[in-house]
Each structure stands twice: as C-alpha cells, then as structure tokens.
Image (cartoon, rainbow, N blue to C red):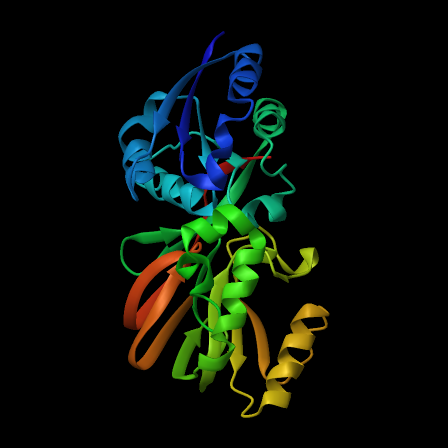
Length: 296
C-alpha cells in the first residue's frame, strides 16, 4: 500500500546542500513505498505552519534543514492530536539532534534511507512559556548567542568553525545573571553564567553530555546551571570540567527535572534550538513526555 510523505525543505540550510542528490533521495522514498510531496520554506515559522496545516494528511513527515527547521516542524506537530512520525535529514551547521541520534549529516541519501528503514521512537518535546516549544534545548547566558549571531555568510564559508570563532569573540563580554531557579528537586539561587534545559547529548556542536546521562523519551530534561566562579581561573576550571566530561566543578550543576521556572532581576535573552528566543524576566520550561515519534 502506497504511503504519503510530507517533505519540508529549508533551502537556506547547510549552504543549500539539499540540492545534492535530492533526486536519489526522492527515489529512495519511492522505493520505500512513499509518494512524496515537497514543501519549501521561504521564511522563519513556515515549517511550523506547514506541519500544523497539512501533516495530518500524511503518513510520515520529514524535513531537510538544521535543528531550527526540525524545531519548527515539531512545534507545528504539537498542535495536532495524533501527529505522524517525523524523519530528519540534517543539513545545518551544528546538528545537535543528529549527533544525539547518530544520524548521517549532510548526507541526503543516507538520511532518506534511514527514514525509510528506521524505527519511530518516542521523543520528548520541550515547552517554552505558555505556547512555544523547543526540540532539544532552551538556554541563556554565555555563548548562547553564538548560533544565531554568527553571520550567515560565515556559516556558509566556515561551517562549524564559525561558531567557535564567534564564541571566542564573546569571551570579553560574558556576564552573570542573578537567578532563582525552581525545579522538581528544589530551588537554586545564584549568579549564573549559563542556564539551560535540554534533551540532547550535544550542545552547539561543542559540548557533549554522556549518553547514559540523557534519555530522549523519559519525560525528564537535563537542567544545566553554571555559576559565576568569580575569577578567570575558576572559569577555566568549569570549561575543563565540561570538555573532559568529568562535570566535577562545584560551579557546575547538572540536574534532572520535568519543569524549571527561571526568575531574573531583569529581562534576559534566550535561545531555542539555536535561534533567538526572546527576552524574559520570568519563564517556565517543561518537558512534554513523548508527544511525537522521531524516526532513527
């Protein structure tokens, strides 16, 4: 029996890499029994609109783009009672979700075949405020501006290196935020350099969390809080703790929670899945347990 596949394409992602072998990828879908309909995005938010309006008419939804594109698709599917399973063809720069799932990156054909032959797995989706969502991370503080502040031409020319260069430029302007965080296990009050709620082993393509620390469908997210150590040496200790994956710094907290409420003294800028997420003085983040299925 022929199945219907909705394929949402972000033509700006990954230096327009979707053009490479797209015909062979579509042929793979055809061989897998899918009749594919293409939807091209032209502006931010269109992937959400497409998924919300049309996904219910398809057996499977897939997208070609970066993590931001996948995030938009999931936000659209969250508006449906019974969303179809989702396939992901990573074509961005950092591709944290692809790293976590072990998906082939910038390989249209390989990822298409994974969708055809893969298995749908329950996947938690993050809630941001009253009616916004994120696929794998919402964060504020040090380096969180990197993924959306890096100029698009640098991303195209330098790829992942552009993130690293942009992050290095921010070293001189890192600030801390007086914060109260309420989570399932208690409350933390501290001057924070960074805070996030995530469902991924990879963050910005740089930081890695151990695989046994993260479960993508357990209804619990990882809450990461980095306190201001008050010195350059202390900051270096935190960086070393993260990069070595020891996570033994006193100024680094990794907790597990279903929800977290952040309260600041003034509005603070957030990112969601590598995109600008707005400024908030008070914001609640939560974990929606397995409302969608991701194919991998």
